[in-house]
Length: 150
Image (cartoon, rainbow, N blue to C red; front, side):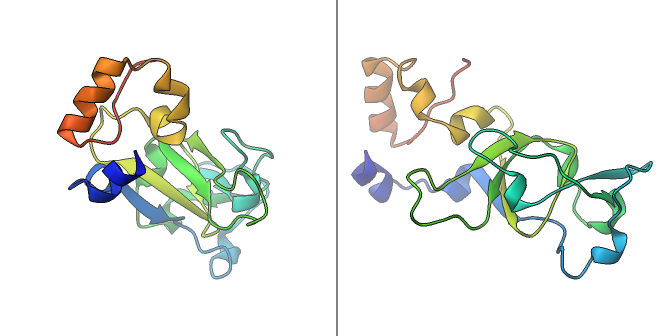
């Protein structure tokens, strides 16, 4: 499978956009508050992100307009930017919406709306739902993931 991906004409950039978090938590500190005010969103930092879920609630809020991007309103996969190299599972991410991401996170947005975010986050979950015939078709089309509805 890895060889097929390596020689595929498709790359992740054909299907997804990758971004660093919208808010630089070092240079925008003056905008943070611990009180959730109108037009503010939770500020997610890398240490809030676990494997498939948040491990802690954000403690700070930030006005939406601090960011020039409007990605906060889109469902996206938010991932820790840095992880411990000694961990067995190094990629920690979860699907979030209506949050602002600090620069200690990265996030992924599908370029085509029909792509299932959960599949991108955890493709192994779907392997049992894909038949050998579908895998064969995927190999012939040189597409390295398939969209399914769980």
